[in-house]
Image (cartoon, rainbow, N blue to C red; front, side):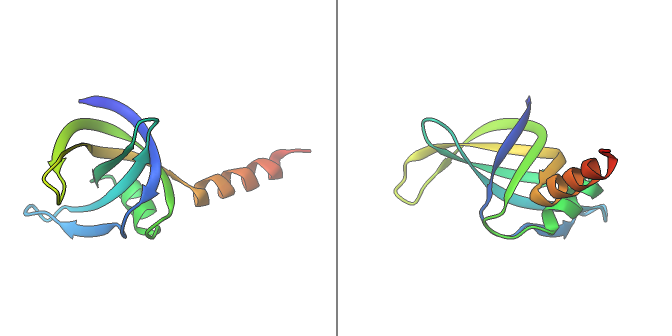
Length: 110
């Protein structure tokens, strides 16, 4: 497990589900571009504020997430192994959050 911050674009719309215990969670996939290639990060969050932030986004929106990463590998349609990551997210930062914070900071300047 690696504690990390990632930033990328959503591939598809985040989905909310309910687990067997009745606790809701949100899943999504984020495409993160590195120097070598693009990685697909499978994200799950049980945190209410992170879930709310993700559900307000749509495919192609940019998001930054913090949480625990686990390396993995997956096989593409051609049968090639590709690197990937799983993340249990506990925090999110979106363009909405940045705009709101900038507006709040302008209100405190004199």
